[in-house]
Amino acid sequence: MTAEEIIAQHGPREAMEYDVVVVGGGPAGLATAIHLKQLAAAAQKELSVVVLEKGSEPGAHILSGAIMDPKALTELIPDWKERGAPLTQPVTDDAMVFLGEKSSFRTPNFLLPACLHNHGNYIVSLGSVTRWMAEQAEALGVEIFPGFPAAEVLFNDDGSVKGVATGNMGVGKDGKPGDSFQLGMELHARYTVFAEGARGHLGKQLIARFKLDADSDPQTYGLGIKELWEIDPQRHQPGFVLHTAGWPMDNNTYGGAFLYHFDDNKVALGFITGLDYANPYLSPFEEFQRWKTHPNIRYYLEGDEAKGIKPGKRLGYGARAITAGGLLSLPKTVFPGGALVGCDAGYLNVSRIKGSHAAIKTGMLAAQAAFDAIGEGRQHDELTAYPEAFEKSWLHAELNKARNFKTWFKKGLSVATVMNGIEQFVLRGNVPWTLRRDKPDHLYLKPASECKPIAYPKPDGKLTFDRLSSVFISNTNHEEQQPAHLTLKDASVPVNVNLRTFAGPEARYCPAGVYEFVKNDDNTDRLQINAQNCVHCKTCDIKDPTQNIVWVTPEGGGGPNYAGM
Image (cartoon, rainbow, N blue to C red; front, side):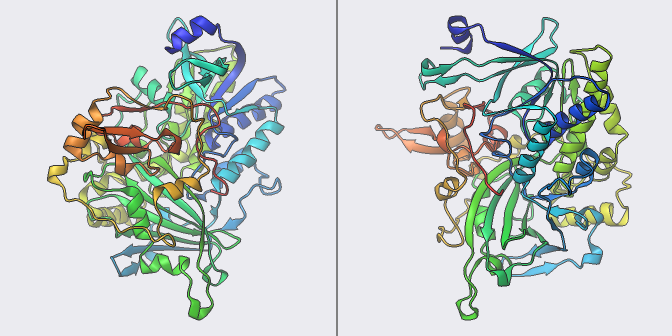
């Protein structure tokens, strides 16, 4: 049954009215909700605000390195320290290291540009910060509905955004309502703020519908894969931040890695692969596993029996796409009835490898614009004050300084390192030129016939691992009987085009083993989609060379449940 047929048979859907509906309970969405309530309290006005979160709780789907610049959080909640915000480990030292297969070179700290200095920042679990922000929001009267994904944008007769509808529950694999069926509900608002994170399902639709990206460069993404480890105290350096570039990536592939020392003998380590890579045989997951075998990295993870140092233990795993286009790829962020904030728009500063401060700041700016509009008796129009305020903000100045950072990497690591060094260190971000990009990530993939296969070593189960054991510790789960949320526009394309021309890249770019090509009884090939494994990273939606895969929202509460990530 189609969605329309289900509504016709089981509807109408119940509707709830709010002043502002926020889609997504991450830092951007929660900052929006918190600031709306702060403004209302200061003006002694009533304002109804609801946050929809597709994860089982706020923070369940949040994945980031993360080093957090507290600047925006301090603007939002000045007494965050007194309120027990989980920013407890300040950065104590920075290292930028260029790796060869066995060699390494650490850039002297006095040569590091300002964007790589983290003095005053904190190593955090962004999931924990998000959970804390949700508590602050609820204390102010914000309604938070976890396990309720916004599955559909609702429109008024004039084309403006009316609100959203949550997904149906209890629909079987055949698309028909089952015994536990629950019809989704509608949430109507004067303004709807979309804060879904990178490659937001509804944000993507809104960008296309309102042509919000008509005047911007195509967005470019990276896939961040992360593990959380507990290591021996003798190898632990609380507050130490290590970034690497170079091996195992070749000179023409954008990527980098990090290793951050939390408190409690924990380290977060991760690998970011630019999704504009060309070789379809490349596997971001395998590149990450290989990176851990470098002497500079395995030093922290491997034990040394002779010295009484115990081997580290892997505690968590996850993956998430990040936006990397910066200011030049930023779409128009407002449209009749709503706005895009945080990574749903693409505010992350890739030169600093930070986006949470930008998410919080843009949420606050959108909240101010929405609050003022509602105070004037307006609804469903464009919140033009939001992008205008952004252009005057410290965030715009910060992103403008780094506007060329990612684009330089199309000229290779060596050129990018030199030119970004000149722009950020010599010119201090006052750059008189602008580099443009003209095509999205999926168009960079070359046919397999033009590329060399990559032989990756087998996992040893101690330092390196396979996908399935990794997904297991991400606590990922989906209701088995629901329709697959990874949909194909044309079921013949994966075999006839992707497998034949590009050697089936979906089996390699997915960090969760969702896609695999298997043989039918007659020896023909088919694409098997293991939707149960999906960690909601959105890589397939971004990198599929034919743009045939469309990620849609599964039932609420499904996906990963990250703890401490």
